[in-house]
Length: 143
Image (cartoon, rainbow, N blue to C red; front, side, top):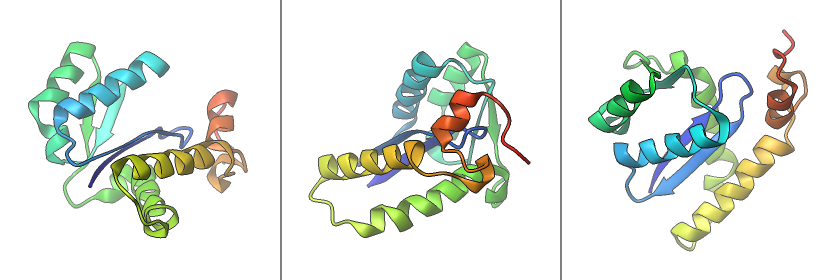
């Protein structure tokens, strides 16, 4: 199973978790298009150098939409710290805790975990607010 996670650096909101047997660049573009319709266009998209991100589909989308692609240096996951932290939590707290009956079951369970993560879990880095509260507040997290 392949997984695409999208996390907002500012609010720490998990904007999307996409699960499937394959996630090519065209699928990444569909997810990004959906998020742009829901939330507006970002100034940049920071990713690692996976084939789904460095291929033509996302590159063309970014160029056509005036969004700067921001690739982290290979071997430097700390340059994308929020998503790396999130991608450690998701398996520990969700994926490794369940036996999935199939792709649809995995999607349902992961969607429930994402809802809990965004709506009900306070984050110390956000001053004890949930990611949704931080996004709604629109103010910088306390330092």
